[in-house]
Image 1: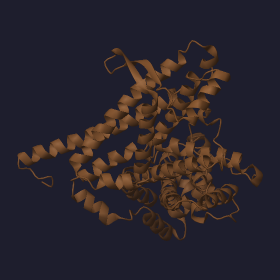
Image 2: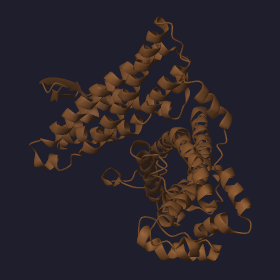
Image 3: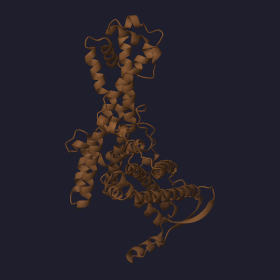
Image 4: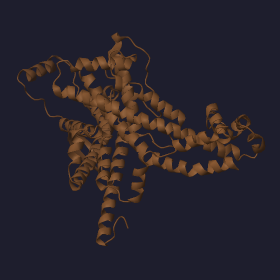
Length: 473
């Protein structure tokens, strides 16, 4: 039958485009979200440091398991510090969830999910970041950044401009891909509907294929029984499907479907298929870029460690302690070095005692946050690494993985140490780090996996060269 022939003819095109989305375009979306995340993290830290917004006191207690849109309702300018601080923090937390946990595949991004992401991307209008914006978040953020720019050093102004510019560009690229994916999901919806409903034994083909109206009516009759609650019933798409099958202008509708299933950069796709040789520099730089996802996690660990150490070393404020502080400040006497002894368990399960210099450890974590934030935003740190040869980049990766694993072991030991404090008044104030440790472990595993894939590819390539086999053979 003509209808079934058309359906069968577009199935290969659907599979090809789905593969294109999964392997290329949705990976671009993830990369752009990582850039956006790094920019938002830097702006959030800057605004808190300048006391223009307040850090969200409940941030560390929030758990995200799905796409959530931050509150966008209007708020008075008099409450900017609290409201913008809370909402901008939620915005950053959502980006952290997307970059760390969310699966960017065609199967996971259905039509409702795409709409949610587009709504999330519209929370801040980065392209029109003006003080007269109708959006409360966009307007107050613009005013806060303008306040920071006044009499600020050129490096701060440059950082703000760089972050807002990259954020606008990232959101624009993401939205373009999501909109195209939305059109593709509509085609998938119609094809799956044809497959599930048309093949149902109760579907009356003879009656349905007499007119578009009869086809829509027959699909609606069986929709609840066949599809159930798995998918919503989109009347618009049902009508579109019927027009493609039986409409007076069915050829026009079918040509529109074929047009939507075209892969825009078909020449590049063909070139990639022709050449099976991956770019080894690109593989290793993708691995480096994954380090950028560790930055925000380390920043959260740094904040909790700072608070926990302050609780642990806190002394009762009396006349003598205040007098001692005054003398140290007056004569610039450095504070006594803080050293913490913990039990660290290595990869083989062997426990050993180790002394941790508190200030040095916090400084090292903060240094890593700076480097990884630069990588995530593809700033100067990223460019410096990219301009190095592959051997130097691999050495950098090896060093970072080793140091991150060491940091994980120390922080894990400190988490156990703080939770085991004997003083109940101190123990109740301790911030747990289980979630951050879990995220850090997952990020390290991801980087390590990609690094191993690069090493395996290089070894395989070298072996083939020794055997005189070309990659293109």
